[in-house]
Amino acid sequence: MTNDTLSMERMQRTGLSCVRRLPAYLQLLRALRAEGREFVSGTVLARVHYLEPVIVRKDLAITGVMGKPRLGFPVNELILAIEKFLGWDRAARAVLVGAGNLGAALLGYQGFEDFGLRIVGAFDADPRKIGREMKGHRVLPLQRLPGFVARGKVELGILTVPAPAAQAAAAVLVRARIRGIWNFTSVRLQVPPEVVVQKEDLAEGLAVLSHRLRQPGAQGGDSVPPRQV
Amino acid sequence: MTNDTLSMERMQRTGLSCVRRLPAYLQLLRALRAEGREFVSGTVLARVHYLEPVIVRKDLAITGVMGKPRLGFPVNELILAIEKFLGWDRAARAVLVGAGNLGAALLGYQGFEDFGLRIVGAFDADPRKIGREMKGHRVLPLQRLPGFVARGKVELGILTVPAPAAQAAAAVLVRARIRGIWNFTSVRLQVPPEVVVQKEDLAEGLAVLSHRLRQPGAQGGDSVPPRQV
DNA sequence: CTGGGCTCGATACTTCAATATCGATACTGA
DNA sequence: TCAGTATCGATATTGAAGTATCGAGCCCAG
Image 1 (spheres, rainbow over the protein chains, first blue to last red):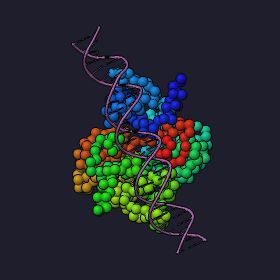
Image 2 (cartoon, chains in turn orange, blue, purple, brown):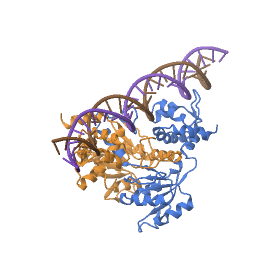
Image 3 (cartoon, chains in turn purple, brown, red, orange):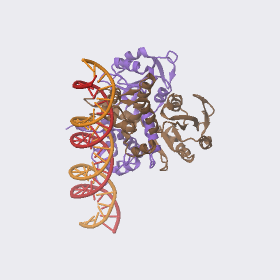
Image 4 (cartoon, rainbow over the protein chains, first blue to last red):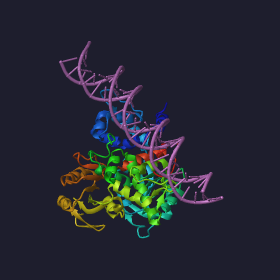
């Protein structure tokens, strides 16, 4: 049984909550590897992220990596397994559409490579922005996106345009045969079923924050502690 | 029984998933109100957001607003109830810490008022940024934050600094007696229990996107369809 | 005026995530 | 060499979220 078929089998049974926690583990594991640690216990991982040790062990189980009693999990092996599981072992190529402030922030973020993402081009429909240099990328006109995507084997589109332009820009991406869209606009996009859309909605997080502020017995800590909410 | 005690009672039984969906309803409801619609059925709300009608009805139930058979829910009443439930009926005052690209993007975002948020000041530790005008705000030095917060009755801090500066900036916010922190950095903040931290983690969304792209039978649609995942 | 059909609210059911508990394992230190 | 202990994996229990179904209400059409 190859590692690949194993992860394929497990993937179907994977809950989203688990997938969401994997990057956090990965970040910490990389820091530990940089320190030269070879093993780490699920207990330690849990403490850092305010989780229960059992959850961590269950999450890590989907990677197929076995831990050793009293020692913990092999750091490097775990990193490779998580990267492979998420498809982050080779960076996916992405184009950014919408060269506003948010687009600039994402373009300038050093570290997407660690998350399996490489932004290879920036596009905008606004003639005033086209041609400008932005974080090392020259902003190109939206009309040139299809050719760029086809030639560059681009799989992902990052959508950071103003809301009114969102659906049209998404249509361009879809026609360019992009596989997935990371949608930072507030618009629900209409796309064919083969295109995956991941919507990043600030309002959701803000709603949770507001709600927790109103809660009488709101507790602190970081992020949303899954327990006792 | 006042409306307030009612919502207080229900709040304790509210799941987070429900809270996260409320802003989406709110957005659509406002659009409908602008069109002059007085009633809307849960079925319609569900279709727009790719949800099951039952979920919508259950979510709306926590607001205490009753719908009428064959007619649906009263749009305006529902808007007011959701706003009140989330505490968005009066905008919370917030300061932004970190005047980089992401900070600029958030400062420039027209529409936080609709989500119960008003950014009233921008701060940075970098002398080169201090004094600059940014989206109608003058960037102030971090040292002046405590006084600003105390005088301005500021409740929230929005953290958009680079990762290495995150914990220190959070400490400043905590000492200034801020009640909640909207954390856009990748750092797990250490804060006292009375301070609520909401972490906005791009890596989570990216992980979900990557995972769905790898899924053989990945389906499209928008956001993460809760059913059949 | 009266039946049809859409929509609501409530209840019961199913699925999934989080938690608790257990025996098994292998390193530590006497 | 051998008890002690931290950690693992597995199983069972709890709880929350989503799903399915039902009777009841109310508008509309005939």
